[in-house]
Image (cartoon, rainbow, N blue to C red; front, top):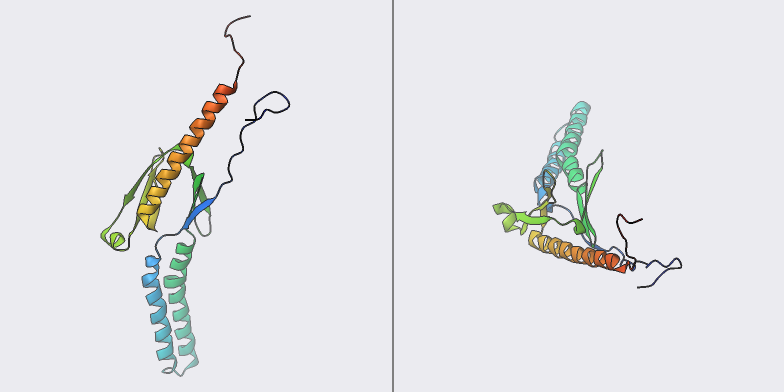
Length: 185
């Protein structure tokens, strides 16, 4: 530990924050929208040769565009708009398409991590990671792949951060050599 010019002890430099993982929910959510896209393309390809009137062609392409927009592009955009980033210091949750919401949980604050799975999630080794940080409702990382590894990583990062914070707090409390007398004049 070094001291600065004014005689106070300087805090040791913190290591830089590193990204451990970037996650999205399981891409299994895009199975049905992908089937809709394939079916719409097949239907347009089949019926495009069957219709002759201009209004029928416009109706066919308009219906296909509406189906693709509502049943493929919107679910894809919703899936792409939800991200989870785990760093060495915090967990960052981003979601929203038109209104972006960002939520951060510091590992040093401490929390309880558990995994909840359905039978389908168990088959794909994914699950919902529930993080109880003392808030009214737990934070849920929905349907993340390798949920057990995510739970283990979050627990280890939290334990490490709490140990580092405790050591720094102890160092800052033991640095003061001055004696303070309360109530003395």
